[in-house]
Image (cartoon, rainbow, N blue to C red):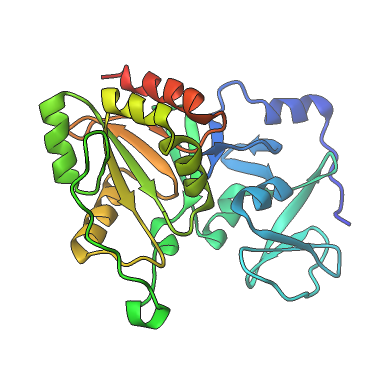
Length: 278
């Protein structure tokens, strides 16, 4: 069991609902667990964080926990602590919820915290390099990826230069989909629930130029496309997938989006809001 720390009710409410706090997004989705802010430290509910990261949270002998994105072996962890790899971090009990300091656990889990002042959010995503570092093709048995044909009208491009040219010619902004097509679960859901629907295709044909920027693990890419995608991820500050960037042909960012429940009608309605910023 954790050593329980009781906060005065008034202080707890003030901490968990700060007047001007940025909304916390983890993997491009609003964090729905408990949040307590103490100065520059953000305490978040441990179980909810594990769920969002699709990580394993295992109660350990000794009263603590083990948190890992891979399988873990049972090992003693003292109460009030969480083991992440070989590191131990503090776990605080607040109103019966185990909470950890986001700033402390993020580097141990390969996460990057990015304040997004224009959107009024704090975004937490996996570091790009940690997610997309496949080994040699021959060693991993990666299947070759065929050279994509030119995109049909309203279809997805893979060349940023081509997207910029179409954007300039049409006056439409670019919708850049930073995705992990063959491994990212949320990317697959976004594609199936939104991008592959007729409603989205009709909306996209009238409003945006579509650009897919893929970071696959099992599908080979040409060196040019891989280099292009990595440079664009760095340029636009992308560290997790899926990330949708709406931008002008000049590279001005109009907004950032990701997976959202509600199907194509909800997704395109919110996306249209970003496009009005032109």
